[in-house]
Amino acid sequence: MSHLDDGRIEELLDGEVPSDELAAIQAHLAACEHCRNRLAAARGLADEADELLGVLDDAPAADAGTVLFARGEVTAE
Image 1 (cartoon, rainbow, N blue to C red):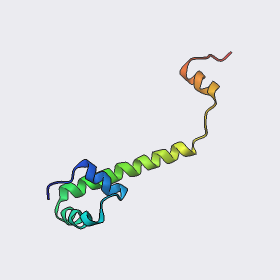
Image 2: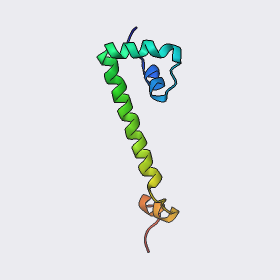
Image 3: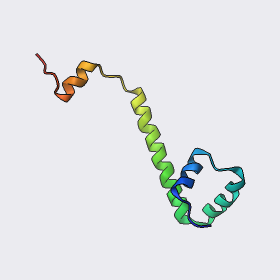
Image 4: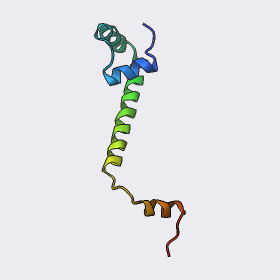
């Protein structure tokens, strides 16, 4: 088996690999440090993105006036 492409790594992360293909992929990962490293890096990026989205979900929403002021579109009087 050749190295896993980005699409296959994404399928692994998303749990979308067909069950009849999983054993061969797992065997490849056991033998291929390059692909294990790529999978670990992709998993790290996905985890970091999830954390950042969680921070955004927990952040209070700014009102329109605050946003316009921050952009410099209105001034304080």
